Length: 498
Image (cartoon, rainbow, N blue to C red; front, side, top):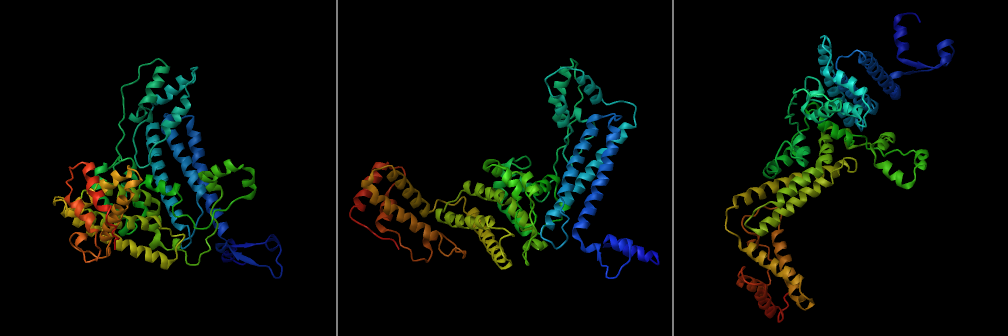
């Protein structure tokens, strides 16, 4: 080496031990930037070292800390941080699985911000001379003989939500009141009246409105029934916002369900698998720990859609598609329409939207196939929007003639279902009548035609005898009269439908 520049060049290269000790002809070096595993190992080792130093510092303070629970909640988040650091694959931009890596990195940022906020509060509290009540209470409990696992209860109180910071000792949090009362009862003391209310997390990230549907904590069920189409359109048509706009809970949900992970196949360890019996092996495959241990191998698709950021939002949509499906079906079940055939017409578009949502998979489709799926979905949503607008305008409209015929025919079919085989011919004609009405409703679905589908220029003709008898029947008439009138006609005619 002749200069510092030579030392800098050497630091960026890997060479064999003989080359390092003795210069010889033909020696070779490799640029370290080209060795992916070494970059990953260096970054992982550095991350773990920094976190380990932080944890050692926290451990050194654990014996002198003046608030055991404040200290414990920082340690709890630190363990979660270490876990997600160990899950990083250090995918590079442009690689399949890079989206999953970005989700993990954003979670890491939120963990670090939360730790920093809670650590600052602990340091500020520790500068005072007063020891926290949770320390005194824990010391009293330590000397008690009891079957109550108070250490486990303390650990539970150390768990806290990210992005919802509550200052003060967790012992007095309102959500921990049952633990607090139990502890003071064990040591035969009157609990203090202090209760710290925890702030309500009202942050709404782009995914919250979807993920919240199952528990309705943020939005009532009526909100979804009223705004169902806006919810679906917003997540489908809007561009994917920065991951920093997503809340911790939604990011954690995506990470737990491996959203954005590589599309390579899951690698199975043959030796490990043979150690499982069949039942335990199946359970193991379903367990997240198994999926962590047996990671996906490298994607080998030259034109993998997971590498293209413009398709990433559809990977997230794929994760919430079942919830979107429930939102759409929930609204469809609570519809109120005056025209039955228009309702069937809109129902067909509902089904098309749902079916398209359910087949979205960046890992399975080629670019051409996926672009066709996107086009079909865009068209179906536009038709659904038009159907919704027309039907909403007719909510107060009088009942359509097709609705009365449909209702009457359905009642006859329900009655015939419980009768013997002697009335089977009647039932078959009513089923064909129903089928013809459905064909009317589904005629030229891609066109927006005004009016009732019975009046469309489709050329479908209803059985005139069935039509006449159904129109003559009063909805209040008894089923016995219905049966008698229809039986008389159906015994002498067998009309085939178009």
